Image 1 (cartoon, rainbow, N blue to C red):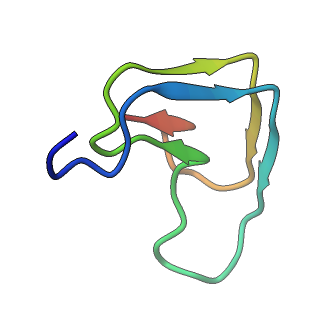
Image 2 (tube, rainbow, N blue to C red):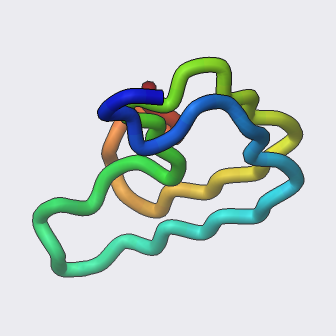
Length: 57
């Protein structure tokens, strides 16, 4: 696992509410950066802003 913050795992059964607010960097509910083999299962993500993606990888 050289130079990787995470390898594998599960993000499961979460409720994420990302409210619209005044901060300009409001975007995704779940983001995976350099996390190969991670599974995202049965999550509910509600975005109250205009960003297109609830999950990014």
